[in-house]
Image (cartoon, rainbow over all chains, first blue to last red; front, side, top):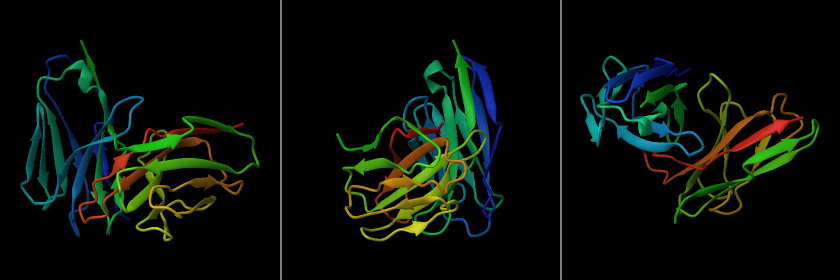
Length: 111
Length: 113
């Protein structure tokens, strides 16, 4: 059974704070890791897909790193803004065309 | 605009009734998926389809059925055999390539009364 763990479960920060959260997964048979952002009342939106150990991806103030040998990925948000408030989902590819999702990290950014 | 639509947004059903959730995509994607979300749990895969007229069970298929008669459509039927159907249901699609980036619809919240 492939288990994807995310921490923390929720996070409350002030506008301007930088924050990060973790996704852990079994390192064996790794293929790809996905980060999604899910805002309230909207559809989950893909942020990054990463496949190689040491991969780093960046989109604006959001970046992610991947360590496939030890089985974790970090998502960083620099200078959090209220519009960053969302649930951030991590998912790992399991077999062809199937994803296993973590429970998500719920981020709230207060003005 | 290309995207995925799900209808209805909210659905109420009496216990013992079957109900069908709609999912349509105009992204020309080969693969489509149904997930269920419950509080405190990650998205769990119900069924998926890689091509038209073919579909496979996911992790929690019991009490559900699907069809894939057209590339654009992947309806999910929640049958009376599903013991705890109240949940939020998400549909997704992907190109079906190895990296499998999935695109999601807005979801349907089903409540059984």
